[in-house]
Length: 312
Image 1 (cartoon, rainbow, N blue to C red):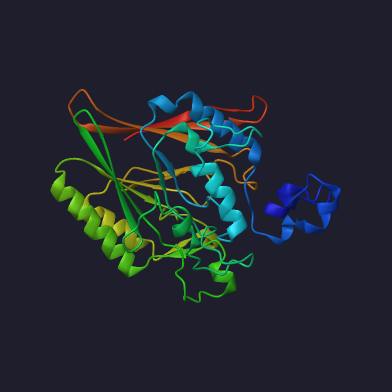
Image 2 (image 1 turned 45 degrees about the vertical axis):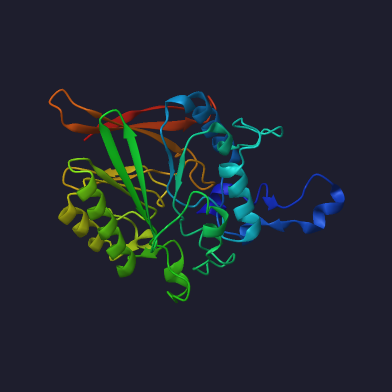
């Protein structure tokens, strides 16, 4: 699907140094690599975040920051998300530098970030080294606290990518993840700990893989029922996730599951999204989460409000 979308028969993508003709031999065809990002909507996303940076408490990135876990690919992700030298959202070459915005960042790895090679071999741990300043998991789980006025929110993320040493088979490892019982137990522990220390304040879970119904077999989170069952047991009402590149909500019964859709994946033409999530108290005093969708408009070259929003 990604190859078809890139129309390689008309213009084959290449990666590597391209500023000088003599470096052409260093190129390799990107159809030998997993799908990557589209820099046009990514630049538009950087423009949007810069405009509203003073109003945002946290930027949450739900995985697949890099094409693979190889050094060259992670170096690009590191520059985009962590480089704060310019103190701007773009560098001199007009490349996005979100680290210059000053917005706190919460990241979790996706299956692409865990690829050891271009053949989707899972278990690469270099993501943890590159993002160690902001990604500090305990048994694959990270907790974040947001606080404003009289509202505290716990954001707890879990990494269900295939672990190093696992052998899921070539077809099964492409685009899939699996619930690890050790990580699930830690997710349980950290959630209960938050609830004890912050009674009546909500917890939101963040995952890369979606535990929603109807996810295609090629993108499924194996044993996803363990996640939704635990969420119901603990009273976790909201799960944010990515991976599918499709903007989709499963609402009506708890947990509500919000599939974000990609912000700039190259195989998500006309389907790039940013989401603004706000938490406030209603007139009755109940905490209320509102999610606003913003979709990339190719003609306007910017993210504009999508007609769908949700209050829950």
